[in-house]
Image (cartoon, rainbow, N blue to C red):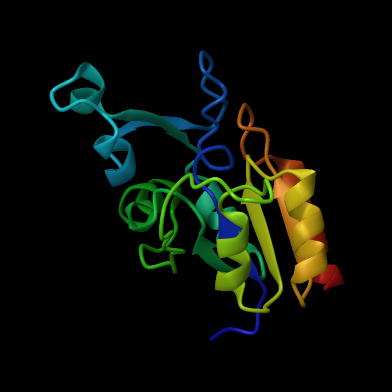
Length: 177
């Protein structure tokens, strides 16, 4: 186990700016992929099922992420599919640790984002940064009150994905830690 802080990565939003519907951001490539969870929610034989999910990825993100002083891990509904389908496109190793969600999209009784409690449990008291497009102020307050180590929850605009200022914030946070 590394003593470096964790960097927990969501795919859709931070790495795949799905909110940029009509314009592919500069530096991104488009792929049609079939992640297991998404495929299970499509009608068999439908046009979407056949074509796959349009995913836009920046091949330069892997090197930028690997250069940061973190232990990388996936915190995405793509789970192990992220290692198989996302990592090769952006240049990450295909064996990153994966948070395995017991159930997807389950409503939290206190209104937290459904991933929040699982992320905290998986981090197991270690310092972490979590990048995701669905993080709210409620999640930030909950983690601050209930996680015993330093944590940064970094919400990402799903129309833009990870940007230069986000990488700078990740570098600053690790340095200050």
